[in-house]
Length: 90
Image 1 (cartoon, rainbow, N blue to C red):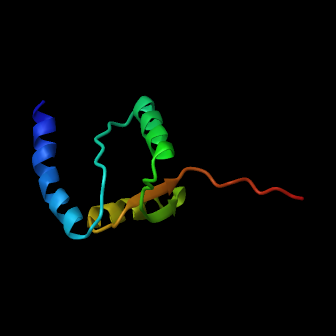
Image 2 (image 1 turned 30 degrees about the vertical axis):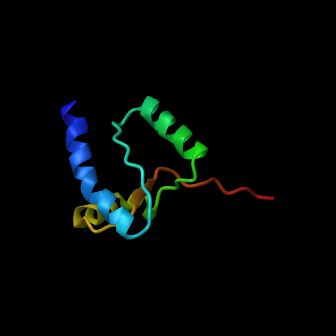
């Protein structure tokens, strides 16, 4: 209950900014769990909402990705690729 009140108060600022820019947004609070990831994935599939991606790093660049997050000025999600796609001969 306390978290909901805090997010509503915090969201007030975002509501004003969104209205000023004639935009809409959805705020989702999730924890790192497979169940919530599935729920979020289903939500994205059913709506026109698409996450904004700031930067994509290869796994070998994990330290650079962390440094990017520490800057705090990203304009979207920072992604870390866990494995490369396998090349096919054909």
